[in-house]
Image 1 (cartoon, one colour):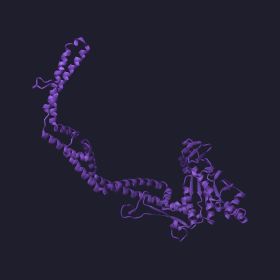
Image 2 (cartoon, helix red, strand yellow):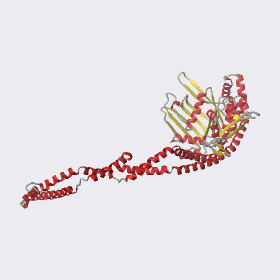
Image 3 (cartoon, helix red, strand yellow):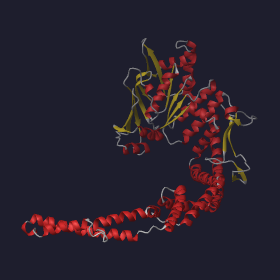
Image 4 (cartoon, helix red, strand yellow):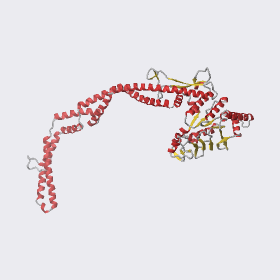
Length: 581
């Protein structure tokens, strides 16, 4: 019994499709139609169901939302089932329901097993459920970079292991090389910076500034510069408070306060309130005496010293030179000096750092050379198996004498390369290999790149063979091929249909095709039909069986559903397909 996944897909209000049910068979299902738009909607719907990018323009004009629902049969032990259950989904008898809703405003919602989930989960499930192969993949495989990716994918762990190590070493080499280039290309600028720092630090060290010294000197200079005025003011104040011994008749504050104290002291016992005032007057007298004494001492100690003033101004000038260059205050200058010393130590250590980085670069290049050689060996081994498998597929696609090979080579370079096979070669983030798929379409023909050496029909068959080989190595049970048979006709088309039918023996295969020779091999034939009532175009999906299928194949063959010759050819094609499976 063939294990299959996608049983049914329901589509509502998506583009030209208003309401359609797509029932898929366990084996080979062909999807055809008069134009590509409806068939594209089927592929687009499946893409949405598998977590593809949503576009509000897909919603039918006038509809509130587009909904795509899928019914899938999965093994309860499969990775997809386990991941869905981890997200809270429920499976009923091995059936998993998936839906995607896209509103006209562009909002997108996803449900798996009756549980609302992030849209990203659909993409995770898709990796284990369905592989999609289309014309975009074919065109991409014409590029050498994609051919290398395809080979690496086919090789699996044999390439993935060393490639992961190589990528890590490559990133480290890029970082180390960037730092080394920074140090070497800016050597002159860094030397100039070091000289400026060294000069500044020496200047600060010679001055030996102390924290707050600039503020202290400013206050001292202010005092020394006005010494005479300060002394005169102190003397006048002292006389006013304590009197002048040379003027016995003079009145001073201390004498007046003493007289006031004596006046109230004699009668203080008669009123507590007056006693309190007497105490306060006594305190004033004591305070006046203290202040008068301090003024006398201040005046005696104040010395107008021009020599000291000159020394202070000279020191302030030296500190001003520092604050003009290195900070607003001496505290800022000291912070600059500390930071400058650290930066100078870093700059002085550049030579040692350059040596360390150079040695690390050399070691990384050696390591990359060894890993690149391992990648080359793994790719060469896988390329032989891959080419042999594709060549065998081509034999089943009416190209029995064609041969596919891989060219794996490196480009030599004199400088800035890594050594692989004893030669310095160009390298990149994926190794040193240049991978190209070559085709010799018939004996005697030299192998040429498939983009140049194959006709349109041959190219389609080569790409289909590649996809089939991938399908055989991918651990997914359902494959969607979107018009990968473009450019193929006649006998080759029959062989394409036969090969897809054989693939459907071990997997579910859905093919969107315009070739009757391919559709004739299908176990189930679906047709996307359009109807137009004059204002709205709608599409539906109809299963073709019996006479209906003959009529559809006739239309595909001759464009005429009722042509006797076309009908006879269609019946013959169906009979040949049944016999040639």
